[in-house]
Amino acid sequence: MEAAPGGLHLVDVFPLEQPEGSSVLSVPLSILDLVSISEGATAADAIAASMDSARLADQLGYERLWFAEHHNTANLASSATSLLISQAASVTDRIRVGSGGVMLPNHAPLMVAEQYGTLANIHGDRIDLGLGRAPGTDQMTARALSRSSAEPQAFAQHIYDLQGWFGEDGTAHSMPIVSAASTGTKVPVWVLGSTVNGASIAGQLGLPFSLASHFAPDQIDDAIEVYRSSFSTEAPTAQLEKPYVMAGINVMVADTDEEAQRQFTTVEQMFLDIRSGQSRPIQPPVDPDSIPRQDGLRIQAVGSPETAKEQLADFQERTGADELITVTYAFDPAVRNRSLELLAQAWF
Image 1 (spheres, one colour):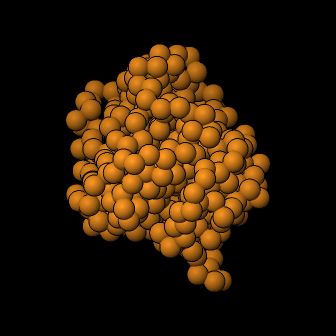
Image 2: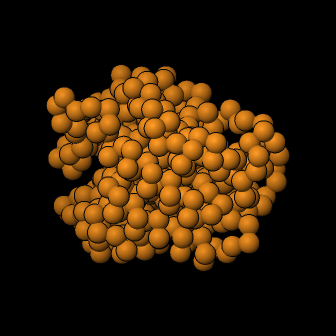
Image 3: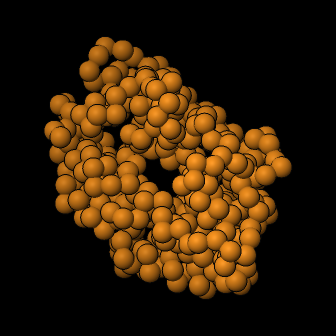
């Protein structure tokens, strides 16, 4: 894939660097939220619980809070990411809020620029735009949503146009269309991916890379190596002077290892449902010995605060990630919030 033609260079838009000599534990922690709907709860309940967690994360010192786009699922209410981002930004003061991500083939790029530019104009420089090429749903729903191409070169060109709409004159690079709602906002763009293909796109475009290692653990090392080796500061889309990796990890922290393992069965049941084609809300925890372990969830930090901290540090050391984004499902929102608190106390 060749980078899109042009001359835009946004090195100063994304100043994310760790101080010299920083320790592993200084690596920022962030949160990916899919607004899970528990058995017996409604989407309204799930959204309200998500906003409570957003307030807490803001107070605890997490770096950013992202919402992931999903459709046609009975257990997730994270379909309209821009609306969730706006609400979360309105109830927080410090934390960055964004998409993890917008599945760009489901959207017209101009609409994405206008939505996220509007968010930046309302909430200031706290908005991130993470973009993915996967539909975030089944094939039937993807066809119903489809608005743009997922082909790599088209994806790259859409990113370049988005940066134009976020730029000083608010004009796309490939067409004379202006977006007044996003002009000058310079919303940082991330590329999301789970394989070497997504990593290569992020590297060649000179953009930060968010690796979906929390559910796709098989190509972690190869993807990071490809991203770093293909990274270009010469691409007109480049926002960084050097590679920046944020890696996903499943997290559940409780007072004891045993309780954390029991609570983690909620997400293990969800993955079993996906494999079996069953569609139901998030289930309460069960005896860990009653269900098989899920290999797709093996990137995890599950246990007491000390256990989880050690597992997070080991994963960070393995990947050299500049930031970790945590994913925590819980049947009871209070359990999730307790996990956020315990992790923050151990890490920050």
